[in-house]
Length: 131
Figure 1 (cartoon, rainbow, N blue to C red):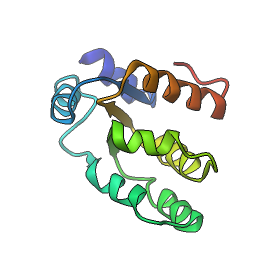
Figure 2: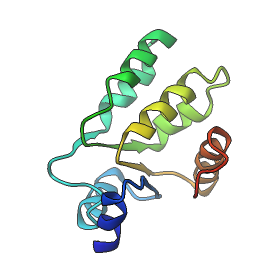
Figure 3: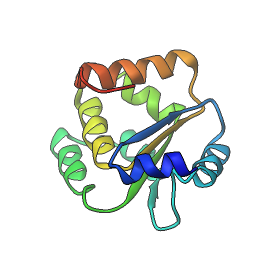
Figure 4: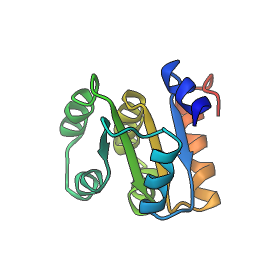
């Protein structure tokens, strides 16, 4: 936990891609200090946003409101599948913008293929990113 906390204190964004259930992933997040009690944790509400017929402008304005607060995202496979299947790149762009403003992102219930797709998405967006 101390090493992870040092990474976070050094402004290094830490992502976890796991096959665990949401509750297990969240518990591991707290025990490893990726998540802290003072963080706002975003989970179920993000899936509702994806399911709604939001326009690109709504998504962009939502992403702009995510900065400045200690936040973490816990996202399950269903929402992640929706993001990764976005051929127009509207939701992908929104996801990338929001995830960059967060301290921690935990993707849970994801398969090895989905893990690879997340890494590929991040590397496509920023070739210098370390994964």
